[in-house]
Length: 137
Length: 137
DNA sequence: CAGTATCCCTCATGATACTG
DNA sequence: CAGTATCATGAGGGATACTG
Image (cartoon, rainbow over the protein chains, first blue to last red):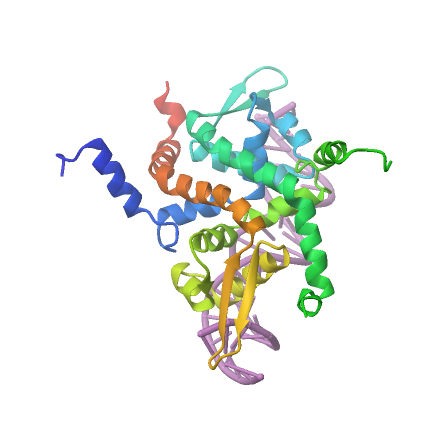
C-alpha cells in the first residue's frame, strides 16, 4: 500500500469519495458548504480579515445566532481562523485559511451567478406561472 | 431613462443586485441554489438528459418528495426542461437549459471541492475537537 | 464588543400510502 | 413509471435578554 505514488493515492481518494452517496462524508461536506450563510461569509472575507461586527453589518439580515453558528462551524472545518485580541472591549478577527481560500473562487462564482442571472430566472418564473405549456401550443 | 444604452442598463442592473442585501432577489436566488439537492441534480444532468427514476437512483438517499420538489423549482426557474412522453408507462425526461448549463461549472466545482478536500476538513475537525488552541501553545 | 442562553415557532424534510 | 397527498418530526432560525 505504501508503494503507491502521491498521484495514485490522490486518484484513489477521488474515487473513494462520491457526493452522490448519502453515507459519504463528502456528501455531508457538500451539504454544509451548500449554505447561504457560508457563501456570504466566505465572500465577505475574500479581501481582508473582518471583525464580528463588520460581518454582521455586511451580511444584512443575519442574526447573531446564525452568524456565530456559521463562523464556529467554518472555524472547526479549518476554513477560517478566529483571533481574539484581549483588549477592552474585546476584538475578534476572522480570516480565511488557505483551505478556506481554496473554496473562495467557487463561492464567489455562486454569488456572481445569482446576481447576474436573477433577471433571466425571474423571467422564466413569469413564463412558468403564466402557463408556458399553453403558450407553446 | 430610456436613453440609457443596453450596456449602461446592464451596469446599473449589476449594481442594483447585491446578494448581501436580505431584500434583494439575488439573495433569494442564492438561497435557492445553495441547496444540496440542487447541486446534486444539476451535476447528475451534466452529460445527458435523465429520467426521473435515473435521477432517483443516482442521487442516493433523496426522497420522492424532495426530488420532485427540487425538479419543479428548477423547471420554474428555467434551469431545466421537463418533457413528458405519453407512452405507457409514462416517461419523463429532464434536461438542462442553456441557463442551467451556465450554472453547471459552478455546481461541478462545489461537488469536486467537497470530494477533494473532505480529508483536510476532517483533519481540521479533529484538531479543533482535540483543542487546537492548547496544541498551539 | 462579541458573544451565550433561552424560548418559540415555522418550515423543510422524511415516511408512508395512494393514483393516473 | 412518475408522480401526488397526507401526516409527523425536528432542525433551522428569529427575538429577546443576559454576560465577560
